Length: 115
Image 1 (cartoon, helix red, strand yellow):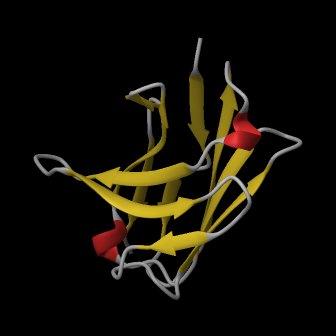
Image 2 (cartoon, one colour):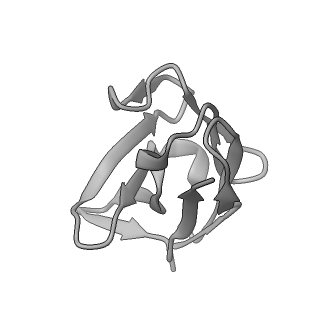
């Protein structure tokens, strides 16, 4: 079965950096586009970034120029390098794959940006 496991979250000061990872299993990772989303308490799950199977990328305007999405199709892992973090980036971050007509999500990893 499809499994997505996020890691790498934590507490960081404004202006700091974190790198999130999403380990994937149960499907042919190298052939699927992948996405990062984030959600604040009481808020909707918002799109953050997208990467195709061959590495083309797209970002939400709010993170463009600060975040970088990447993938390693040998390790079946997706990454999100987050630089110049702001308090508004505080959220639970989820990785996502859309496969066979449905969305799959990981359990999420908490990112808190605070001094």
